[in-house]
Length: 457
Image (cartoon, rainbow, N blue to C red; front, side, top):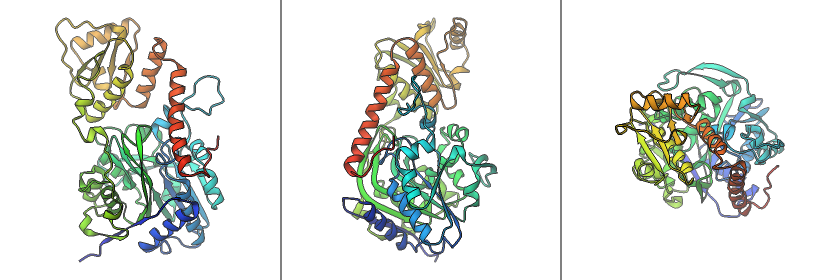
C-alpha cells in the first residue's frame, strides 16, 4: 500500500510575534520532512503568497509568514528568493486607490503597491528576498497539458524556471469557490485577461488546470487568522485560528484545511474534488496522515458564503421592492453578479428594471423606463424579441445602460457606478468614504492583532 500523504498542523497562542510565527512555520515544515531536499545551495526559490487586496490579514497572508519562509530558504543555501504575486482583478480594476496623488478619484492598485502598503515588500527584503508584481514579470505562452477549461495562458517565466516553487495560501471562504486555499491561490499567476475570464461556472476546473502547469513543490498555509462568510474580500469576517499548516501535496492540504474550517466532507469543495480526480494529489482524508495538532484540536465551524447555504435565488428574486427583475437562463456566476448589482440599485430611491440571462420572459406590451433599465451580461445583450426592441430603442436614445461581459464582472460594476454618478444618484465622495470605511475596518482589526504593523503609505 502506498504511503499516506502528510499534512502538518501547528497551533500557537497569542501574541503572534515574528519570532513565534517563525517557530510555528519551521515546526510545520519539519513535521512533513523539511525543505532540505527541495532547496539546494545556489537555487532560485520562488514564493507565491495570497495578497488579494490592499488589506492586511485576514484578507491577505501575514507578511511575517512570508518572511519566515524566505529566511528558511536562504538558510538552506538559496542564492535568490523571489516573492511574486498578482493581486485580484477587483484590486487592479475596481477598488478605489486611496493613495493616488491624482486630484480625481483613482481606481486600481498594482501588485507592488499592495506589497508595499502591507509591509510585505520590506519584510521580504529584510529577510534577504526580493519581490516582483505579476504585471512586471516576463511571461511565456504555455500550453496546458490535460487542461479542460484552460488550454493556453501567459505564465510567468520565473515560476517555470524556479528550482523550488512554494505556495503560501490563506485560509478563507470564497463566494465563487466556497473556499480559497492552495489550489485556488495559483490564480494570481495568470495575467489580467486570463484571470478576468475565469470567473464563470467552470471556475473550479479552471483553477485546477492552472496547477497542471506547475504544481508547487511545497505549501505553507497561513491559518493564523482565517476568513469566513462572504469572502474573500471586504465582506468577509475574521476567524482567529492561530495555526500554520504545511504539506508537499496541495490537494491534501486543501482537504485537511477544509476540515479545519468545519467542512466535514472536503470533497464538496469543487477545486479539491476535481484536482484529486485529475490526478494532482490526494483528497481522501483517510489517505492523509495529519501530524502535529489534530483536526479536532483546531476545528472551527466557518460560516460559508450565503450562496452555499441557501438557494441563490433567495438573494436575487423578491428582495428589492424598487427592482423589477427579468431573468432567463443564467449561470451561477451571473446570478451572483445580479445580487451585487441589485445591492447597489436597491439603495437608490428610484424604480429600476434589470434584464439578465438567456431569453428572459416579459409581459405583452412591456415598456419599462429606458433611462432606468439595465441589461446585465452578454446573454441578456444578445436576446431577441421584445427585449431586442427595448435594447434598440435604448441605443437610438443614446442610453448606454449595457453592462456586458461573460461574466459581467468588475468592469460592469465600475460602469454601473459611473452611470449612477452621471445620474446624480451617487458621487465620488460616497465611493471614497465607503473605501475608507472598509480600509479602517481591516486596518484597525489587524493593528489590534499586531501592534508592530503600520501600513506603508
